[in-house]
Image 1 (cartoon, helix red, strand yellow):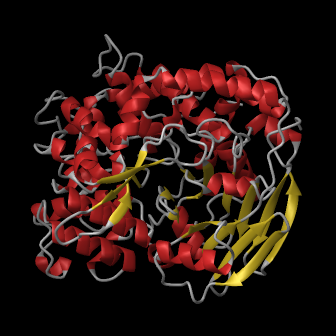
Image 2 (tube, one colour; image 1 turned 135 degrees about the horizontal axis):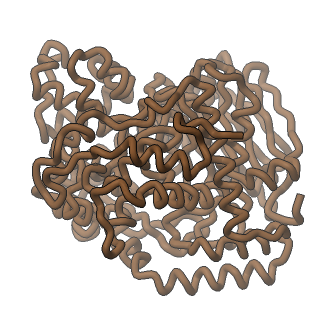
Length: 591
């Protein structure tokens, strides 16, 4: 192993018998998979057989840091949660920012493997001395902010806590893991945590990360900060957060509205980042080690929800709980976002499944008897908030929605065409008919309909002289952007920090003491992407699963900049992408 970046051990916890042990982190695995998503994927692939029930004790939940976590590198507080998704049965790697990642690294362990399942609720406390197990009987049923407060009172105010809410306990299939204002949201990692009767993980410690060459690391950090200062996008993020993209995506005609029936929302500006800043912003918010501060704390200042505070809401939450449900009231969106965080639910999947149910109601596929008397009309704000609570508690009609769009659609003949998911994971808040390359990114993403493994849409929109509505060149760009995203995930960096790719090798070289180039890092990312593909193939996924909802393939957008567009070239883009990856025509990696 190199001289820095790693403590050299990770913890394995068996929830069944309340035991733990440490394992050495080998130089072989760090050199081939680097960290975070890479090492977590390798361990998940090696430690469990294919086709295990994702909610069984045999499914591992792996939490792993990157080598840059805990250093002074900008935006280096990002940790990965890797497991088999109960929502899609595919590999699921979801990340979290905030303070928890760096606090985890200060325990002196690089990662955590959780296997088995306890017979009773527990929470874990990880320190440099190891792991202690504590009863969570008094925490079971509490919402995430309540858990955070209770655990800190039990330990000390300096610890950091990642927990699940009632949704994880009840096995809502898109339950999230929450730490303070940050969330590992997508794919049901919180559901897996709940299946193990694990309510919370607290981390405490003060151990520093070894650094091979401190002077060189400081110089690399200085260059990155200079580059950040010259990036105009950083100012926009600081002012309005990620929700600043709402008006831009609406202008592109790609803003999901009424369950992706259209790509424009007539009051989009009313729910934009600038509107949040003007009406609801209390203060800015930054994760540990972050000079950008794209987060903000917002509060409802009048009306029914007066005093409700939430972080953000982020772009994805604003759209999927806003325009996707035809809601243009920011106060309601903030209240909905707050409820999702409290119950511990992915806002993207929550907004998507409610939107799907509303379209079923619109088309007469759900009656008032089916919904328990709830009128699922577009823009019905009180019903949306009631549904979120019902999903979080898995009660009444909410229990049906708690299984996600794919499983709900299977119960409703004729609804498949507008079930907006890929591989069982609900689509993120970009309609790819406005930028075809985003459709390819959705189709080939290992965990399904997400944007975080190579967010495509906004980048291409701002590029000059690019045809947004063709297959040509899309595979090359999608492949490279997927590698860019993986480079961040493996290193422990946040992609919103605008760290130039060409500066990351110097950062890692100085930290670890091993010589990196951009190409050597890309070689590692390609190894990880192919291993994720092998995991999914082992679970039974094939090329036919690299597809999009029929609505996107067959129904042209009815209005906006992309009016008349539908994605009619997916197969051509897949052929190109597989070839670039060195996979065969069916998308199987060639050894």
